[in-house]
Image 1: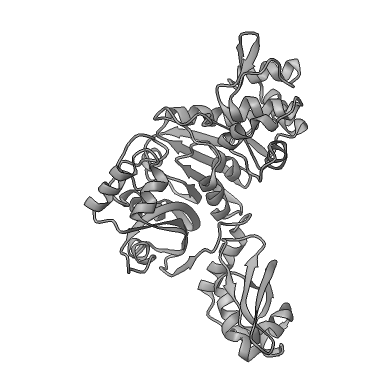
Image 2 (image 1 turned 90 degrees about the vertical axis):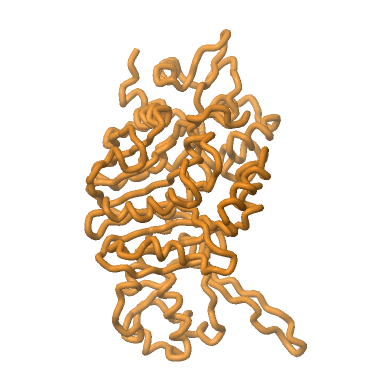
Length: 446
């Protein structure tokens, strides 16, 4: 039997019927979402005998089960797609399945550790971070370089007419094809090849890429180890992406770069972007010294990794995202994130690029704050309380926080876009704070 698009989509809908999503999986395991295969394995004794628990055992933990909660038709499609195999009267899944917004993503099991060089990683923090940093607007052509588990390609397909997804790993493309069939997506073209080879001199309106950016002495895993010295892989991506963007197009990439102990963390990225013809938003999420970085990525042999860093004169490593807009310019906005991104940062990023373009007088503009939270912490000052910490956090955004001067609060409370800024109470005193919020993408012009 051949699984049709309709049949595969019906199978995906069965996962929805059973409740195979991020929140309900975490609830079944009594953990905070999201739950990886490793976490599911640790908490498997909490699972019951219901349908959702059976799917978690099959597709997150990788256990054999006696029976599945699928109908006969759904079961046949799952077997044809390679999602299930019969095993001694029961069933086992040779691949893991992770919930993704509105979809299901196929990848390799990792509950028992990673064994194979061509391992296809699941949906992790890097997957979610890149998805957050990707601009979400219509594109005629989009590109996902190093598609891996194809989660980015799936998301791009929702707002792009055509998507090209590339990977050097045949195993990744095999699972990506399964993912596309399972989700009924036929607008993604899969291409085999290394980095930019499969796209030659093609240009795109939107690019998302999570290359193997880890600064590593090894070539053990294709998804992690790029095989280049120091941060050469990240540099190559940052400098090559602009050549594949149409005018006005956007590219989002996760990268890791090396810098000196006392050097501005954004300096290497700024050097890489010189003459690129792109404006850029740089966001740093993690800063490590060589020791902490080695321990993070090599639990088995961190001493060897650290010796490699010492030999190459590596002092500090930063990890984050670069978002490019091909404009013919070279303006850069750089931010240190207080937290990881929350939801989609697309709107905030577009507001930041708008701020880079702005040449007017903010006092003449009608401004409004994006949906946010105000965090205030007061400290006892002997005769009363005084503000000790006053910051804004966006409901959805990069994870960057914005400090607020107490004197600006009365203006912020009136910042609803109904009047020009200069007509609001205390506007002149609040202007430095509002300008900073505007540059951070917390404020939009109406």
